[in-house]
Length: 342
Image (cartoon, rainbow, N blue to C red; front, side, top):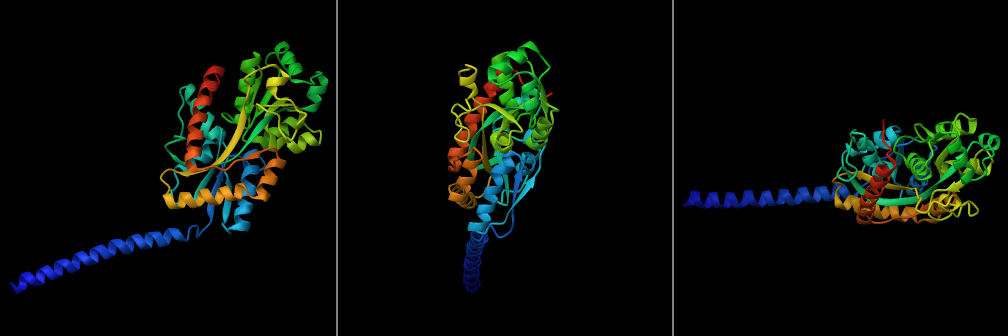
């Protein structure tokens, strides 16, 4: 009887310590996450420094450092239309310390583009990521090498269409890489105007724009932020923007749809922050609210508007729905254009 009572007391004591261990474990986990972030956040930009994606990321980086003292370190990992950098993040730990500056390429165009020719994607843009917030949207802009334009009397979108039709295969069209919005803006243009221009993919906008200004390529549908200063300086000739509406940065520049009577032509770019799949809910919420505050700060808004971008900022759920809709949209565009990665 005495042994039975002692055993009963011992059993209850063991249960009590077990419960306390669980509670303490949960409390420690909570404490561990409450001081997040307590080390640098790696912000992967899957395109080179100086390009539109990089230009969108850096004002955010500065704002987070200055206002909430978050040490966000940008890591440029270009290549494969953004897939190389995106894959790095997809395979990272979902602890909140790795972000990706996703784009319409990595999370809209690449899935149908890379699989249409029988290829494979190194990640699933929906299953392998946690959407955090949509950062900004912006138009692309059709720019030409000024000497090429002058030599061939190309002063409008219709002039370019006429020249390309009369000289099939003689116009070189640069892009920031296969699958980017720049590439697809050109493919959509070619499809709708029934022209043939040779696509030359680069590893990001900066090297492509450099070759465009040097006359090594003829035209490009560039993200507006990476070309805007060269347009203003006269080193690139802009003909039109690819959005449905004119850009406030260049109100006198027509849209391609209105300039060439191509109703339905629209190829805008967007950029948003995502993390690896299965991020903890409390960290996701902290990232989302902090980033939205940064996006809507006067400093960041001013920088984005100056480069022709429209700041957004939305919830993870809204961004997740947005990504799904973008994949559906670009799947149709890719299929109709016949574009694929060789």
